[in-house]
Image (cartoon, rainbow, N blue to C red; front, side, top):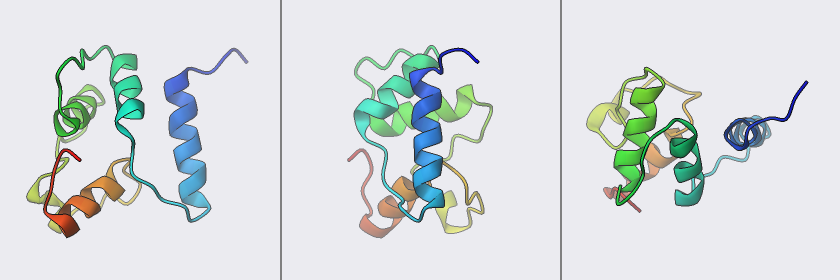
Length: 94
């Protein structure tokens, strides 16, 4: 097998941590790496906009930081912890 991309490693590491019961919010730098890996220009983008752009690039619903968290059933979503913290704190772009 060849070298894995930094994006793929990041996703794998997050999934492994979640499987071991350690969930965490995504840091801005990691989100930027992920976005750039998908060809998204992140210049002057807020976290919310970056995450939604990534969701669209992956052909997913761009629902980050929206009221959809009230009924979201995407338990394996990479952004779930961030969404839940937004719901609990009523803040976006932290």
